[in-house]
Length: 527
Image (cartoon, helix red, strand yellow):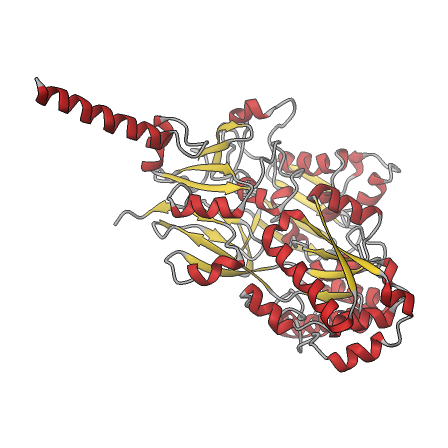
């Protein structure tokens, strides 16, 4: 009798322990969910719920981790080159006419064929909604006139005929193929009247489709059986929403997620020797910008530039790229162009600054979304300028949505801007600072710079050898960057490398330089 009771108590204890584990961590709330973790399920996180189903409307590069696996474009950027994808083929007939033949075998997740009309309708939708992504198509014939409401949307220079898509341009756009790889320009089936609660009905054309979307909690993806490269062993994918990077690390270390998309700089030293840790270059254009309020103080800007110990900042961040150098890879340039600390130059320039500007408290604004890493860097800048120049800097952390809006309406004295690029080219970065560009938050206007960027834009159309073309692109990229540095309008923050962790048991995933994660070949290695 006592033995039976002891067995019962032991069983009860084990059962309660298992339930406690199952209910731990908020979003692992039930036994079924806990059991799923032991099965073939890949887990990762986003900081916020995208809260909508249209990839063209999302903000924040991280959400592309989700949509890049739900939708597939005609081409993909892979291994530093652009590749035709899933049997689609595009070729330039003239420098104003791109013709694309779609693979007729491709199907939506509902089994219906993907046609050129689906692409065309998706492109037209960008003009109907208030969408910044439409800028990717501005060189399509009549695109600007449509936005100005001078001609109807039916006049857009794109035609669709079953499996043939033709793009007619008003001016050459040699980087159009790069733009067409971006998730925002992927075809969509039908999003009308579809809410998050109906997310499982979303028709997709990527390797995955949505199985379940629990608002503010998690998203579950399942393999798309109609995907051309469908693999029965492709795992389920679960996205959770975790705002704090420190919390995400705890979840990773406790095997509750498999991919950590950001390792804080304070954790790099203790984690870099762990299996699964890696650092990868990401193509961004990150800088400290000087706003219009500093325009009339060139010597102050010069002093700010030369009073920073860039090598020390690199050490603080355990960075692979050197702050003071452009955020783009050095391979984009014909020679190094950069700033370095020079206190003699800095103090000489500062002495020429009017006394009221020397004594004024200037603001340094940054987005809170960067977390403790960005805050740490901003505090370092504040200390450096106080130490070397005696300058008072007020730090102003701002919520991301309000921050971007404030940059558009009125720029701050000094601000940090991280600018993800939609294609891996120097032009993609430099065009943001031409006169009147929507992303030109420093309000820079320089005719020589604009001309060089225009030449950089047109160089791909020249009938010259690829090597000559690369040589000229590097030369022009260097000239453009040098103008920015000579005018002291920004401080480049060096080539960006993300520090991440992936559980070694997962293979077949790809993360490209545009920070797009492809899970189409994902597999679990059990041995």
